[in-house]
Image (cartoon, rainbow, N blue to C red):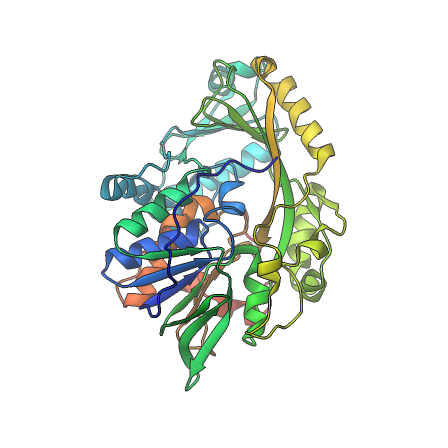
Length: 441
């Protein structure tokens, strides 16, 4: 059963020229297009499938500062304000609410890590509330468990993955931008070494700026341009249950299972970090750079199968601009659900939160979470192809920081003062080793 998703309109005719072309209609791509359109640029967004149909609609919906890596925290903080201001500016509803995020634990080691993050966060003006045993047990009373401690981050919140990217897409259309779904970008044309157009399956859009927000497809697209972008994907499975559970926190994380209230009153259930590692040619190519990350997170990962080969998103193939590409053969990445993980998630959730026994499973789905070797996205203009801006590798964090990432991209394109320091995100860092630099959270 696929993840729920709202459908948005497609612009009937492919535009001939644009100030900027955004490749990819996930949350980062639509917010980049939105902020560029707000500045008066003529933008065209091309998406091989539907807006938001891959990881942007298949995540938990968390928009958090809590436990962010130091490099991502400034963007996370800005993004929370942008989630709020977007609704006021556009009149569109992404489902964003500052409901607060609750973390509970009986592990002294885990609690110590959260306390260290709190101390760091204070140095950059971010407040988080450590909970003692009594406070954690009270906030987590729906579990019926006595907890050693926890964290409550009141300024964090959630948005609706089913509607967020479509809502931003509707705002783009209001601003005069164009959106072209089921229109894969096949490659880039250049003149004098600089971007001069984006070639799609329906024709070429003349432009001097191309922004690749292609999610799990980004590395294979970059390969066509001679750009080496190390990227590997983890297949993650989650499920949703019907309304009916009363008294649960809006957003709860424990080591056993995490639970998020949806807009319809149901809940999304998941196990943080758990996934399948499906081998692909691209993954094998970049394996040495990913050893530090996999070494840190191996307990959460299990060997996968041939799903990655069948999907085609991590191929080492090269294609011509006048032939069908892997993106056209796989319009929407909809990988097989790990049924064992779904059973484990559901059983853990029922054990942790007895109120969920009043609900039933309504959907289960999987997604490929694309990562970089250090767990921090690559955002910036690629020096070897002027006019080509990469925005990918969000490592499971892209939904929450999507507004900030989109704003930063718009700043880079227009020459405005960047909303955050862009240097920690620049993809040039992958030209050197990422050993010892894996994101802490």
